[in-house]
Length: 308
Image (cartoon, rainbow, N blue to C red):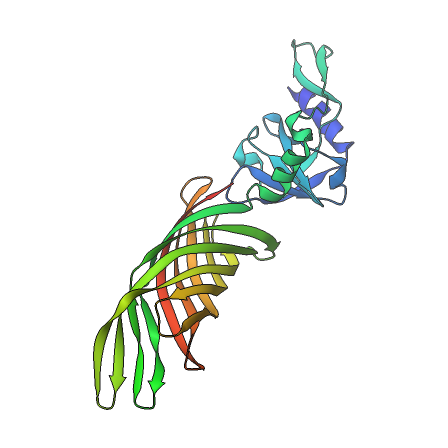
């Protein structure tokens, strides 16, 4: 065994070596190697790590620009961490000693085989641009009150529209990783129509509620961007900006979307499944009698999602 270790060390020392930069969330077995030589490698290639128990291997899953993504499942986690030195697997790799005689060693040729599926452009595109980047979401939105006041005439105003909660389906895409565990993402969500049945009329010294003769509705599409902070391997906090595109009907005037903001957190329950909770603050413009009035919608969003 001592001879085997010496031979492995000799092979590794004679090859170019790199170090592990980080582990890629939400998985804990996907490590990232940064090198300007990244394009020399492809999916299926292997890197070797020397451990007290012998050599173990990291298999390349994908290569994106100057980053090599390797699967560490074959190595015990205690031997692979940030900063671990790795080297390309040599063409001739000592597998084991057959007998106690130090001169009798079996060697095998290792070929840099690539799975046939990986060779297709669509698979390469998925590995580089979809995997661990794109998420699909489904949300429950608890926010049924449009706050604001619009002047109908010099003495009367209307506002405080009350309605229903709603559901939403959406998608989010991880755009860019930044230093200090930060990253940027963007997404969109279609919110099913909210119905508004009641409003409040206010006049000199008095106010009274009323009901729309035809239920007023707003149908919205939100677009958003997030600045995310990775708190732990499975936990994120985020702050972002949003904008609503609104289609309204049944109001005396017309509702239009404006910019707002949101903040929340995410927890990966399983490797690819996560749950979010966020507070969303939307701004809207209510246009009536050729005038615009500011309205707002605040809601609690509970979201479930899957990262591909």
